[in-house]
Length: 345
Image 1 (cartoon, helix red, strand yellow):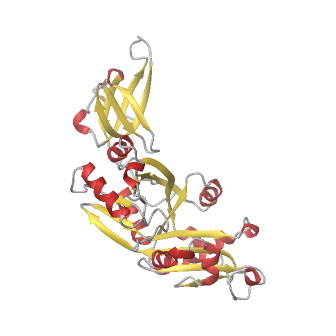
Image 2 (cartoon, rainbow, N blue to C red):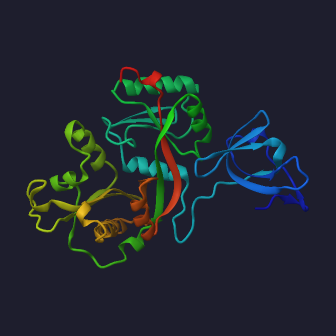
Image 3 (tube, rainbow, N blue to C red):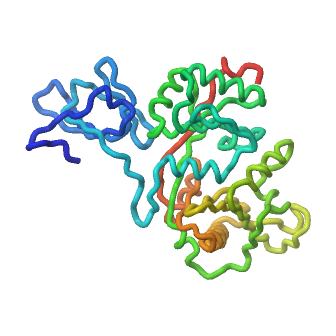
């Protein structure tokens, strides 16, 4: 990390660089003659009252005393690129993921997108803020609250801390609580399909009753909305492995589905979701088989890169995706409106 010009450390950032990605060096024990350097990289969220607020890639905001600052500069965003992991910006991936899991109803508010799907998944029932809402923030949040209240939903905003650092901070200051932390991961598509075809995996354009029964989140009053989200998207494929002894009858009869998955293909991207395996069938390779057949179909349609989303605390799923070559691209979470904005919902 180079800060010097002609061998001298230089501070090349000011309060005017708030909102930009920066690299800063501070001195531990700034008032002492001898100290240690600490380097911090992230988005400069604020610079007020002698304190710099820098939000790192992991979403943690670090407070740095201006008096301890010995060097600093603006640095460009650098998307993940390692071990063949595809390169992409946060904006490209969040847009692709939103198109691959489309809300039943959406409306624009400036550069924000309000999404609703009768409460089926947070992704399809939250605001995607990719820019300026075109209104003062408090006015925009009131508009958001009213829009979701009219649909009987709690207002939520999906934020990427590194990309939406200032918004994330302002929402927190207004009492919007954080919840449902997750990571968007990316990987090369071809290695997923680098295995012999597995005849046990059935592919279809729509989920059947066995698939839906294994998924378990598309029943009841939200079934229509769930169907709209699951089958929406540019080119959607569903995969299923029948349980031993399954006959294709009603859900729950003779075993049903042992493993399922969904993949949506658009341009170079293949987005994987709804990966489920029956508890008694886990660690038998079925999840890998499902992903392989979906990947093979996505490759046939011209895709080359894969992405998926997984909750931060789902260690079992993260370990599986590690073995399949996926790497973290960026983290995100939701900000839920405070009680004052959700009364009556």
